[in-house]
Length: 627
Ligand code: ADP
Ligand code: MG
Image 1 (cartoon, rainbow, N blue to C red):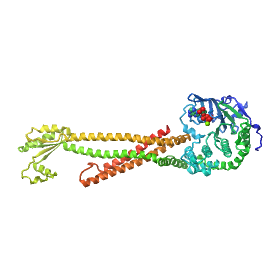
Image 2: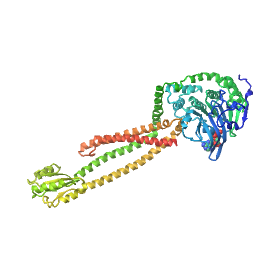
Image 3: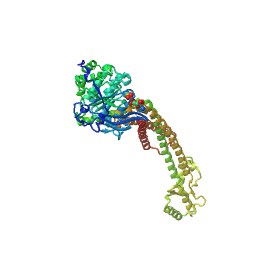
Image 4: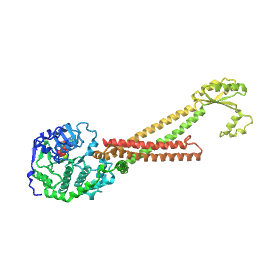
């Protein structure tokens, strides 16, 4: 069969009109020869094209690359885009993948318009349209097998992991790389990476496969394997568009750039049989490109020896639709967990060197805030205590005051709306109270005469009204005319001013520190985001949904924040315990009014703030990585 002459190897140039006449739909007219090239692989006419370009222009700035390309590709067709380097082959494939937007013209991919509403639904599109990048674009921190597994998880998260792994392994086997499954991209040769990239694109069984120079840096045997795999994909219904710098593939049609002329391969491509392949291959040689590495013998050997078992293996794997609903739901949860939580934790531990300053800064900020809150509670307590004392007016009764006048004064004070309470303190009570005060306990050794007068202790509701109340009783007959009242008009306002100033200083420190913390965190996040940008880009090119890309960042941030919060809470709790220990040794209240409940609230707040700050910084980093 290999000796079949290349009689059918005519590549016929057709006009651009080929594609133009396809507009708007591939309703083939059977009267002319056009019917032949418009037919699908099974010879079925009138199929909606999988990919359709109508007068597509693309320029980079002022540099026009594609100038009015008309081209329609039927489902299951294998076409080639050829042309010299710089002619726009990659640009065309990137347009079809939605990475670029056409400057003018219409671009339809599987019925979806990419010239209008370009950004919307790109993830959906890319789960159907796989891309083999010239520069491979494997995720550097995943092994060959993990790269394939990720592509499958992104595409079909409801497929159980065991099946995904099986499929990924079968795909690696199909490119002769099963033994290198545990190797990271940097440990693979360029040709091996290229084969992994092909396997990653094929493993998801895409509707459209875009391959950019897929045979670059490959030896002849592997090139033959990859060619065969792409042909098989086309035979199984995948639309395959291959960009090559020179015509290599047994394609049904060839789009030549930069002229944008469509050449029709005279040979009718047959599928999944050796004959058809020999045909296509013959046409390759007949093309006169002098393509050395696709001689028929080599291709056929690879095909018989390698391909049949691989095809069987690939087709034995269950399809998502054959899996019961509950298993799909369970698999979806498990895969989401893997994609978001496990991958987030993994990148957190990998980025530990960069996340540590973030964690430390958040922890310091929280320790500062937590401690200040405890101190604030104590100060507020002290101020309230002082306010209580400052609002007390002691009205000294004259020795000569009669019980009636005292009662009258008391009644008058009780009727006063500014007064909270009135208590009668007899001279004996005043003495007893004074004796309890430190330093005054030797009062009992004084002469038997009691130096303390009887008084009315008047508690005023609002501290600022103390003075007015005191003045109002001054001239009462029951009141001592020489030393009428005692109250402290200043202590409270002094204390309050002190508290305000101290609070202001503390707030300033917190703000300053927060600014420094923001700088430190933003800097660290810039580093992390820079390292992660390729990963994010590739994951999106694989068609990942938003949460699959964002989720790991959130987990990474939450982990960082949770640890920072825990460290800060431990530090604040430790400080509180030390303070109480100190209190009990020196008999001085270091933190008056701060009890265990208050501390618990502060600790809970510190940990929550850690989580919030962690998530916020992660989102900051994510936005940088996406930009
Ligand atoms: P090919 O894949 O056929 O070698 P490309 O599509 O990569 O060609 O590039 C076509 C032309 O567009 C080249 O001249 C290249 O310099 C230019 N080009 C490609 N990508 C960009 C870009 N992102 N910005 C500006 N010019 C670009
Ligand atoms: Mg290119």
